[in-house]
Length: 154
Image (cartoon, rainbow, N blue to C red):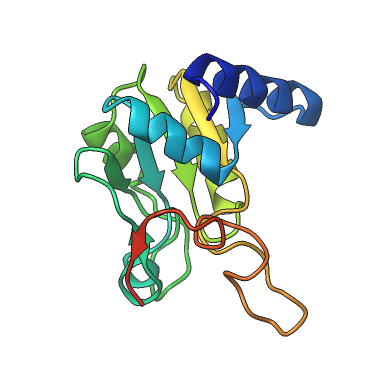
């Protein structure tokens, strides 16, 4: 297992290489290592409540697992209170690891949070379920679930 310093170094290198407008990007395994090593690291799940309820969610202590929807369900529209809700649960200097289904919404959330003064925003690459395989199924080729990391639900 890599040290936190090694993980942050790799994450920042990915940000430079990919020209990401936030601190960096971590793999699901790296995110889990960071969460295991430090209670001040927070996972911000930006999926809808319906996704968390019906598909599953990361198994973490409540103080580390923050749920702030990027989009609203069932409308599918952007959450106009995203920043307000994030501010209610996260300090601007906290290490925030953003997670969504496959890594798209989490990138947008990390970017918006960074633009609004959050200093340590990281995208979790691959997301919770990852992209679809050739049969149209998720959780089979990449993501938090495929990596065998702790989660509960459907």
